Every structure is written in structure tokens, then in C-alpha cells.
Length: 242
Image (cartoon, rainbow, N blue to C red):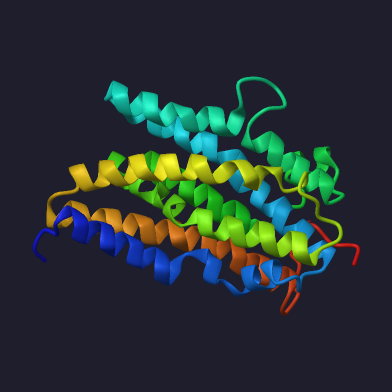
């Protein structure tokens, strides 16, 4: 194919999100529509914790490979967003408030004992992708953040409306995330549009975003299979009381 213009490339990236982002997954429709049991919501939060916990690991590996100071400085804010400046701050700490608010013991969540095997495999594949692929592919894989503000607003509205065991405090992670995602995705999109100029590079960044969408989709496939239908929970994984 011929090289796309920067605007054409952005349009192709956004089209991937419109077709493949995990807000379209049946599990999210159940979750946001108030059709999940408390145990299913707990299973979602428990498994998603591993993704949240590994994001700064992924970002640290990206920074370590980046020779440009300005890009390192920009990307470093993501570590602070998730890890915080001190104990008890940051996105991971807020996610643990979510799991605690849902009635899960902190030590159990952090231990990862109840994790679905497919969750671990999907998240680990994402971390390895960022470590092993080119820097521009690693940055492009983060562009699912372009689409996250929409799913977050759906989540907050739907869960507060539908579940009496969910409070605004429980969902504090999501109230702070949209401006961070908008900032981060704007930088990553500008970077990709600036440096992906050849057909080969543009193809690689499009595939990178598809891969990241597949990671998020696979995580929900695992949740649906284990906790909705057919309901086959793997040995050792979290078993809801309901």
C-alpha cells in the first residue's frame, strides 16, 4: 500500500477502536447494564487488577528503551499516575479501593491466587510485546486510551445506577482516569503520526493497536467463559459466593 497521510492514519486507528475496542464485548454490556451478580463484578475487578498492576511495569520497560529525553519525561508521568508518589496513592491504590469496596480481601487480590490463567497470559503477552517490539509499536499499542473515556463514563453511570453495592467512592479510580487517558493518548497519537511515515511502519502501528484490542478482548472472553457461560471456572481461580 502507499503511505497514508497523518490524518488518514489517525482515521484508520480510530476505525480499529470503533470495531474492536472491548466496550463492544458482551461481558461489558452485562456489567454496565446491571445484569451481573456481585460475584461476577468481583471477578472482573479481581482479574483487571493484574492488568492495572502490570501497566507501570510495561511503561518502565518502554522508558528504558527510549533514547529521547523528552519522550522519557512525557512517559514518566504514567508511572506516577499508576504507582503514585508515595504509598497509598496512584491508580493501583485506587483500584485496590475498588476491590475492597466490593468485599475482596486486599491480600487475596494482591497475591493473584484467584487470577484466571487466561488473564495472566493476556497481560503477560502485552508486557512482552512492549519489551520486544519496536518503540513505535510499543507506543501505538497504548492507543486504546483514545477510546477509554467513553467506556469509563458508561461504567460509572451504569454501575452506580444498577448496583447497590457500588458507591462513588468505590469507583474513584474511574473519576480521575479520563483526563490522564486523554493526555496520554494525545501524546501517543501525535508521536505515531509524526514517526510512522512509511507503509511498513504504518502497517506495524495499526497491527499493534489491533493486538492491544485483542488483549483486552481476550481478558473479557475469559471472564465470560468462567463466570457467565458456560461457567467453567478453572482450578484455583476465584469462586464467587453467589
